Length: 252
Image (cartoon, rainbow, N blue to C red; front, side):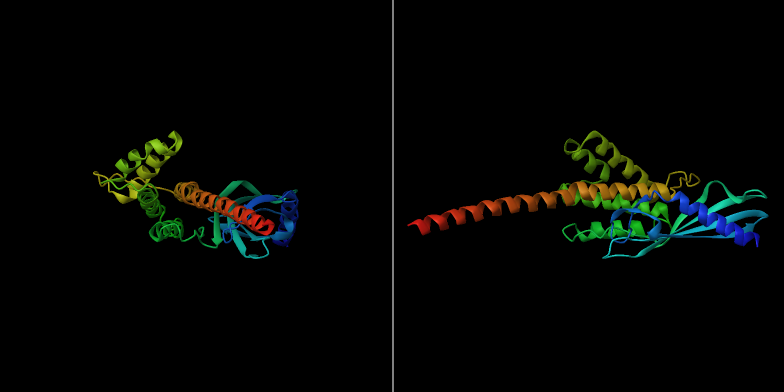
């Protein structure tokens, strides 16, 4: 009976918390939107672990994009405390916060981006939870592939390749490229002292992936958008010239 009352109380409280909506990017279609209560379902399971009351909280979000409408599921774990006047309540922030469906996601980039670059990026996304260190190594490999292809630079190592394109980059981007390289080296190259272990957590590996996505957009996507825009402008000029010639011929 206590659990039943607790569930009702919590659901009512949570619905109130989400009346204003929150920002969400669908991992399937990449649609950015605001999620309101009509696209959100939540449920909780209370359990006891090592004599401590805890709660798993599941959030099921349905993408509002009509061409997608797929569901994303998050799971949070909380400590609970009980009082007779307020019932069960969460204590502090979530102990853990994981997306359990889809297990991983990535942007499906167009094929004008080299296949090897796309494969390294997708693999980095797929294993980010399983092995953040390996994911970081793949992000480093992806970066090197992008520099060699987009900037047409190939040196004996990534340090030299980044330094070669320094004049084409802003200071912040240049420094971040070296930072990604350095972090990726943790998994790519063993330390001279084998007892020295430096770990990379999932959140850190995710940030490297986000940086790779920023570079994909900044380099490849923007270049293609510019190419298409210039092509369309040139075509408009050609069409107008043909239209003008047509009018002149009619007047003759």
